[in-house]
Amino acid sequence: MIRAIYSQTLALAVSRHAPAALFLVAFAESSVFPIPPDVLMIPMVIAAPSRAWRIAAICLAGSVLGALVGYWIGHAAFETVGRPVLEFYGKTAYFDRFSDAYNTWGAWAVLFAGVTPFPFKVITILSGATGLSLPTFVIAAVVARGLRFFLVAALLWKFGEPVRGFIERRLGLVFTVFVALLLGGFVLLRYL
Image (cartoon, rainbow, N blue to C red; front, side, top):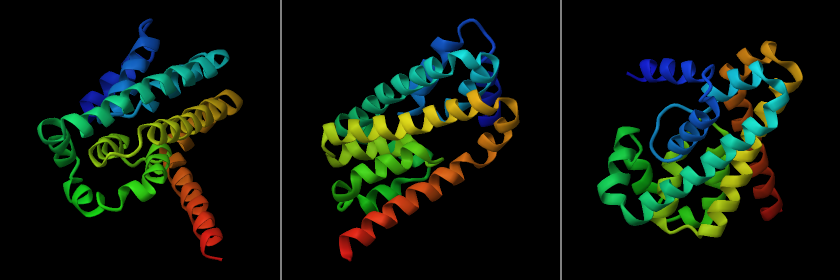
């Protein structure tokens, strides 16, 4: 099922409706949809490198607005919508285990999930369910998703097709290592 959705999403990248589809996929991915917007964004930027920044901005706007829907799901509709989404992704235990301490590290969780392959929708729903400060949530979401989408756009703009395989296979790992090092540095500074 996921493979069929992936294929259909990829086919949208070459249609004249690609910018609107990109916005909608980025929007939905931040709250419920399983396919990341990168599957549309990457071929769109390769096809039109001069529009790389516009494409990244569309992705960012859709993603942050979708993140607000995810936050709302967690805040106002957790039992009816949020919990089933978390169950679908196998993250219910994650919610139960970390909800108490979440607000202390919530902005970092949003930053981490926003730039890594971790399902961003889990964090957006968790942020609303635990009552993470909305301004903190929005700032972290804009920074994380902006970093992710504009870095991908920049790499594709600069290197084109040759970097596509790297991005599709390893960029999540690079972002994960970057965020881990960043968090480790802040922890060291705090306790030294």
